[in-house]
Structures are given as C-alpha cells and as structure tokens.
Image (cartoon, rainbow, N blue to C red):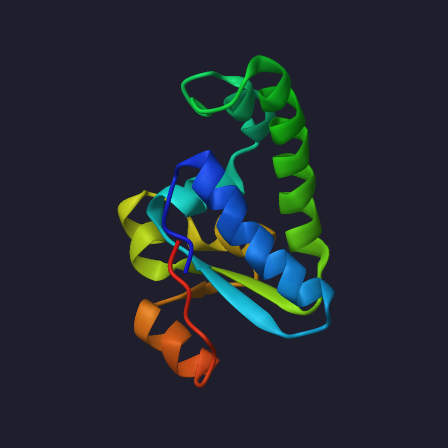
Length: 126
C-alpha cells in the first residue's frame, strides 16, 4: 500500500514494487491519498525539483532524484507484472473521476477488495 505523499518515501515504496515486478514476480500496489496524487501528478518532475518537496536532498541530488522518480513511475505503469490501483475512498474524497483514474491506473478498488484480491501476498505499507 502506498499512502505517503512524501516524494522520498514514495520513491522507496514504488521502487520496491518495480523491482519485484521486474523480476517477474506479480505484485500490486494500492495508492491512497498522497501517493495517488503523486502517481497522477503531470507536474511530478517540477514538484520533485522543489526544495520543499525533497528537503533532505542536495541541489545536484535533487535533479538526479527528480529524473529518476519520473522514470521509475513510467516503468511502473509499463510493467505487466505490476498492477497499480487507486483507493476508492481516496478517489471519491479527492474529487477525482473514477473513469479518469482508470485511464492511467489498473483500476479503482476499495481497501477490503484489494486485500481480498491480493490474498496471501506480503503487505508493505509506505
């Protein structure tokens, strides 16, 4: 489950999912609130370049991080072994249209449904 809107923590959680899926191991992520906003942010590169968005990074490090984060997200969207879903409550309370979210992600799921569908999977909360 990806919940954080903090870019550095989000990167770590998404990296775990992408690394697992790249090994061919099926996995899924449920993006809630802050993480959903990051996944859908068309201005993510600029956001990651802002010192307030990545306060622990140096200026040169921030540029590398921003590019890497955008590339990591693009890779996540492309991997067949990785399903990325939006939390239904987050979509509703953030005022997002489910149809718009579903064009970018693999669907909208309630947390209970997501947990049922992932069954015996390891749960990691970031």
